[in-house]
Length: 397
Picture (tube, rainbow, N blue to C red):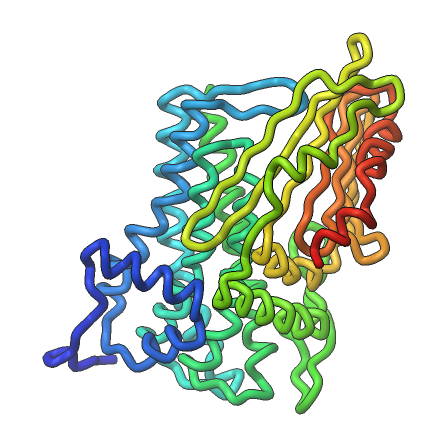
């Protein structure tokens, strides 16, 4: 396909133009997709002026954060070597670039099957610009303790939901299933990148849904033992749209870290609070805050953490479309993820080391987690419950 760009004004490669577009696509995505749709460009221009720059954010931030602070889990801190950190970042970056190109090819190939029009440049626009939120949210990797806020990158699913049907000229009744299949393809690419990156880093260290007119329903299997519920996906997209409106209205504020700290009890049974900290961060309009406390009883202890993803947390509602019911057992323990009373719950336990983790996502916004070395996982569950899930839910307003 040939595109005449003789008199075109492609996206500016200067950083001020790039930053302005990042802000616009995050804050006013519908209007920005309209501009992107009619904007003459080429695959090369999009790749050089957008993908090469933004895709580096998560890789670089994670590498720098790991070298400066290390990674902490269950009281153990691991600091990667320079070779490992840099090598991992390069691999992640290169595979991300390949994934964007592959996703664009998939979007282009799928278009006619959903009543759309094949257009390689438009497909690249969708793959590149919809990933903006995920890449920008990668900045939280600079501080490993805030890395969980990278979940704000789920906003990219909403951007995809808005941009895909418009740019690929898909009929309204087929837009949602087209988006769903594209999301599954993106997930598969994500898992592929992880599957390749993990072993190489370690070495350095030493189905199509049914289409029906009107209401869309059905499920699509995704890696990890879960499934994508298309009906729930549609409902989630509405909640995400409301969240986006909150960004536009300037209402995307997180609970103050000090207020979160006040919700962490001074004592939990026989466990006494010995340390407490809090922090907040924001990037391109996406903000969040967290507070955590350390509790000890003799040689036993755990960390209790409460995080608020603010209005962007509602964007994580897309996660509720993934009916994840996963479990794994080992000789000494287990891991499982499930949805209980509409809340995503994760639980891990190793009986040999008495190490465990228990976490709950509340109101598509707050995350309450307890991790540490305790006699029984019920101690961690009790700590999370002691914060008061209903009280936390009420904070969402």
